Image 1 (cartoon, rainbow, N blue to C red):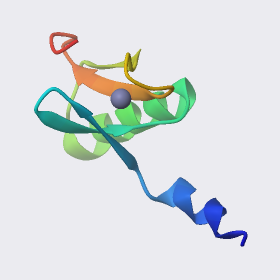
Image 2 (cartoon, rainbow, N blue to C red; image 1 turned 120 degrees about the vertical axis):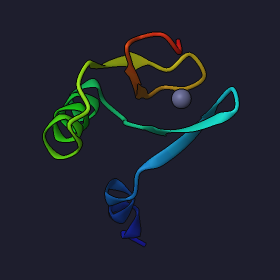
Image 3 (cartoon, rainbow, N blue to C red; image 1 turned 135 degrees about the vertical axis):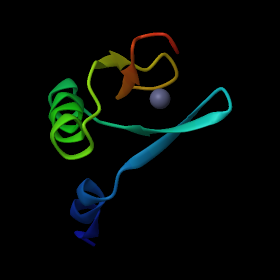
Image 4 (cartoon, rainbow, N blue to C red; image 1 turned 135 degrees about the horizontal axis):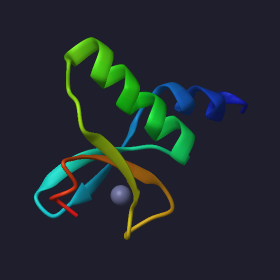
Length: 66
Ligand SMILES: [Zn+2]
């Protein structure tokens, strides 16, 4: 059973209030995802923060939904 490796390609989700957010296991991965969103979707001003419900990170726009 080495299939756990595949989970790395499948973003995990976390419920924060009423929204389900993608969670990233490390700050680095969250920052990479923020850069990708900036380039591919022209979303700027994304920042990363540590989730208060689990040991992972989320992206937030404008830092207002924390
Ligand atoms: Zn979370």
